[in-house]
Image (cartoon, rainbow, N blue to C red; front, side, top):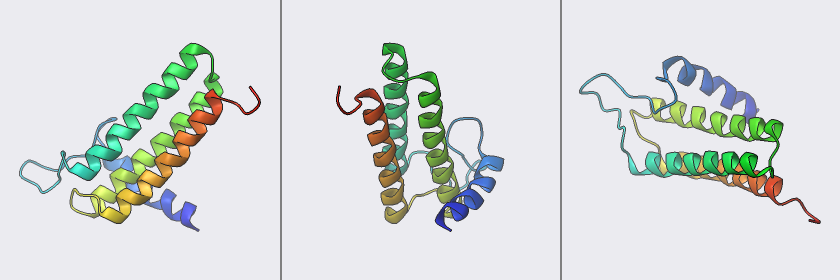
Length: 119
């Protein structure tokens, strides 16, 4: 049920997002492009993208594994966009916590792909 809700919330975000960056509102709107909670989530997402790319470059992560890890990050980013859109440009503390938990899970997957058990 929560996954279905996440997909439903992603649809408006995908329709209104401007490219890969953060959604922004009309000039003079309250849509915060530099909100501290958004900045933290976005910085983590960027760091994870770099870790994935480094893993592919070093051969620790296959291209298919990287594709899945990037898809996970993309879904998290789309959720952030939907949350921000629903809250007038901001993330609530609860939404930030949820996004961080999702980033933590994807970070663990990146680590596990780069450092398989028994090696």
